Image (tube, rainbow, N blue to C red):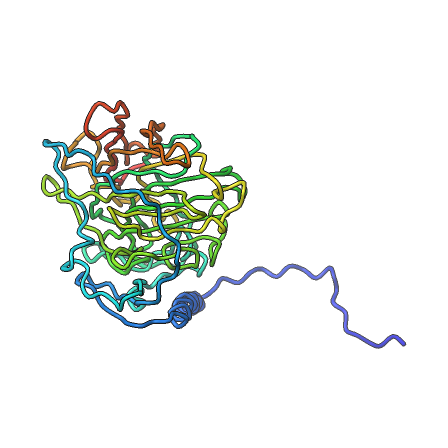
Length: 405
């Protein structure tokens, strides 16, 4: 028997959308921030913490049991010849004064974010992605207004890429503390190993470098980072993609060097510091060595056969910034590298040097000879020397001050 029911007229007129009040926007922003903070609180609650320490640079570390019994490659770190006219110093990760107190034997350090200082206004997916956060706070010397509008971030590059089958790459990044205008913008220098199409969700990457990014680290200093994507940056999450230990995927090995650690800052016309990085596919893992320390890696089980499971198809080194175009229509004043153009040269402009790629599984290294790309040459530039005629081998200067398109 058919029962009575209320029916809605399918031809109901459309109701104009009412503008949301400032109070509604504020409440939604608070809910998004709570979700992000709760995500990390839940993550930290899962850790089997055996000790907690604070480093001299202010990092709060959880010491947990070693995460993997995998052994890294038996490949010694090779320091290239120093150029007497361009001297530099390695990072100080091995120094007890820099490292601070260690955890119990058999443990590795995992960074804890200063959640009270990090106040992004985007969604959790925004936060886990590579760039694209809403502005919330600005550096003390450049106060600004925190807007609740949706973000449309633009990534700008000065880099050199080579399409070649490879099993890793190695080189040195000159580290600086670039000025970053807004907390949800970043400035970085990094390497990429890549395989797959840049369309759809096919592209997969492993990325390592140095980055200044307030919303990620809670300060305006440069930090070592790792990042991966399994789906061309389309979504982020555990075993899918993201930064450092923000998502699951990375396996920590080193007890001295970890994703998120502060790096030394070069001085204009003064002391210069290099970050030595090696990425190597070995025994079902993309291993990452920092200086002479194997830090950890990404298991190849994260990737598929069309992606990075067995090899990479291109290698890339260079700089990147993200410009929060939704909240300020004018070009960002965020620096890339030292904030100076390549033509200024040694101790003024940032550089990357002795860049090589691994040409076969046996470990044969060949010089990088990439093609230079500049998305916004009025703001950020790159000047390459792949002739191999100097002690720097394949190298380039890179960076710029921003402020123009």
